[in-house]
Structure formats: C-alpha cells, structure tokens
Length: 139
Image (cartoon, rainbow, N blue to C red):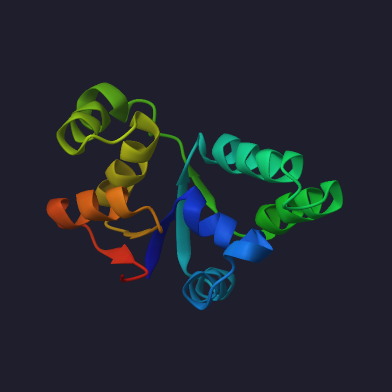
C-alpha cells in the first residue's frame, strides 16, 4: 500500500486526545515498509498544529519536541513536484472541490502517485471520492 498522509492523520498519531486505532494501523503499516508521501509543506502544517496544541495546553513543550522526533523517524517521502503541480492541476482541484490549496495538494499527490489518501478531513475525503481516489481510513 502507498499512502499520502495529511496532517489530520499524523496528528492522530501524536496528540493524546486525537489518538485512534485507524490512524495507528496506518502508522504501523508505514513503519513496516508501506510507502508514505507528503507534500513539501506538510512539515509546516504539522509543526504549526503541534505548536498551537502546545500553546493551548493540549501538550507540553517536551511532548511537542518528542512528536517531531517520532515523525522524523518515519520514512515519509517528500514530493519534490508538489509546487510545480499548482498551476497544472492543484489549483483546479482546489477550485472544483472548494478546498484550500494546501489540502488540494494532498489530493493531487494521491492522484499522481496512485496512492491512498490517509486523512480524517471530511471535505478532503469527499473530494477524493469524487475524484476516484482511494482514501483511508474509511468513514
């Protein structure tokens, strides 16, 4: 299985109040060799979400640092073509499905790589279904 991992799924690995078995199963698959792709902006989104969780008292500074270390240990492949897809495909996907450009990048990457979109974002999952992109976890 090949995945494109969005921040909503990654945060379920990292934030105690969002942890769930579906996200954990995908993380274990990745740890056991499943391919996992992320667009280049993924680290900014996940890092910012961890920073906001820390500021809001959901996690400690130590937990945020530990979370980044755990993510760094995973074999997540950064897609170098994400930015060049913006004018060609991503912008039109964002427009068509009323997504942010950031979210449309995950959909575009999953389409291009023939990967399953790993997300808990319902709007993104709906767009994936309309585009015929496999998505995990199933709702």
